[in-house]
Length: 221
Image 1 (cartoon, helix red, strand yellow):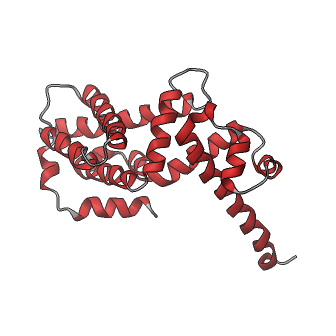
Image 2: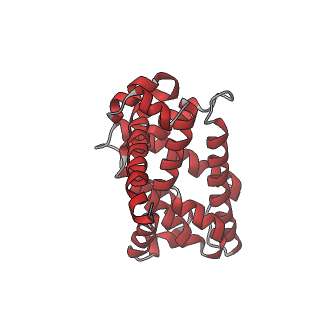
């Protein structure tokens, strides 16, 4: 079999798995991990229950795939920026993360999924507990490094230390996301977070608007 002819079946399998994972993300976003059933996920994906089990034998396997999908769509910038260390250019790092938040507004289904699963995952026995514990730790570390670098430069206006300010920022983002999902007309997600960050990092308000757009484009690469 040539490489060209082999591509067809592999592509079809990948497409089916992608459809299942996206259907699963929808189900988890509506009913949570424990409320969703494998049969319902198969129905949403337009495949048989046996076909679903062929690709994902356990619901935990589906959860891992859904979290990977969420990372693919919304945390690429965060992981890249963390690896590069936001202290190198802390103001642009914060602006880039705001672009990711704006990207999330364009995908409310994944935001709903995050709010439901992160709430469930506070239970130590939940299969996504470790994932969310690591995720929030990474977010706090990202913000703390940026805020610490800004404090060293005399560009941070806050009585809180960088670690406290990082935890406050993560709490603000999560809380506003939940409020926005409940009242999309009354809550301005990205602009409210930007207003808070600009109040403690005035230089953020001096950046040209295209920096955030560039970082946003990077999340899709």
